[in-house]
Image (cartoon, rainbow, N blue to C red; front, side, top):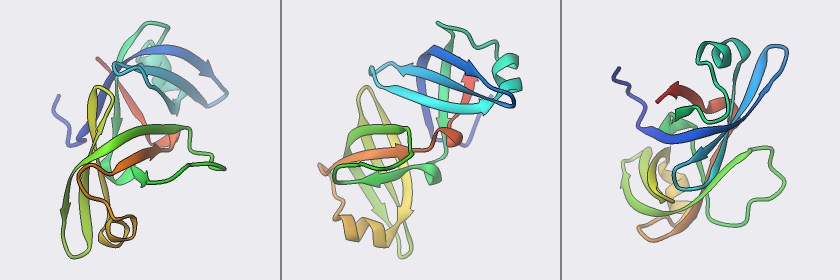
Length: 139
């Protein structure tokens, strides 16, 4: 299956916590970071997610925010440290490629944000991703 989602990170399920309608799934990425996905309970069951299941975490580039300083006081569970690899900026929007441990992410953010954060190759950043914006697929 081909997908338009650029950000596809391989990993292994390390925890599944089912709730009434939703489940949280913790995934250990190949680079060693942990990522949390909040998906429907039905999806977790359909994918037969258990400890050790190989998955791909899928995140649209528009759902990734970037920070250049310490991140405190946020409910966002997923915080992946990385380094800006490339910035392709247009008049309104920009595509920022970020190298993370054993992988790469692309964030689509405004041109104003790129300018305000002074993003350029080599800038250390933290990629922020809400758990509800992480989809999972069987690897």
